Amino acid sequence: MNCKGFTLLEVIVALVVLVAAVISFGAAYNMYVNAQYKQELYQDVYIAAISLKNLIEVKKLIDEPEGSGELNGFSYSYSSKQIKTAHNYVYPDPPNLGGNFGPFELTLYEVDFNLSKDRWKREFSFYVTQFKGNPALHIGF
Image (cartoon, rainbow, N blue to C red; front, top):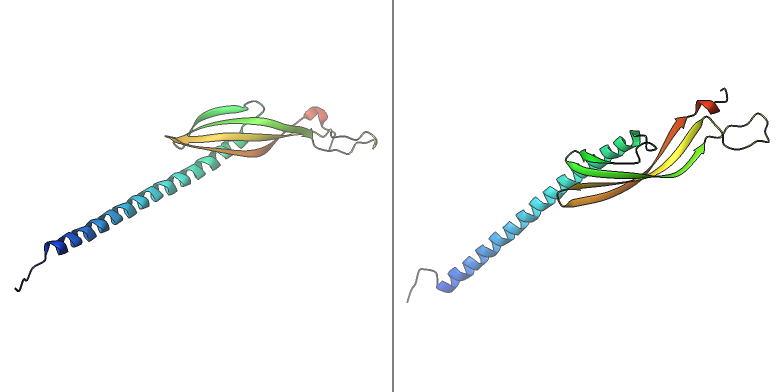
């Protein structure tokens, strides 16, 4: 007998191969979309974190040690902790006095801040030094 068609088994095997190819393509496309979303999210987080760091550095942390708000679509909160305060060193006129009593007060802060968007949340920390002049201690430079 001479048949010029496909058998049922050949059609089923072809369908299984086709379905496997479609499922593989769908999974690869889903992975691509997720990776693209994560890349855009990380890029947005990086920009927001750098912007927030710059914003916090300009604040007077002695007056405003904590804060929160929204920046670039992210909710944020920060808190700062004073680590150490010192005056810059000035050589005294009588050399036996010693000590740091210069006209500038330097303060080191540790700042922790959170960024969150939807269910995503990330924590960061950095150190910042702030100074203020003290005219009463000005020695006459």
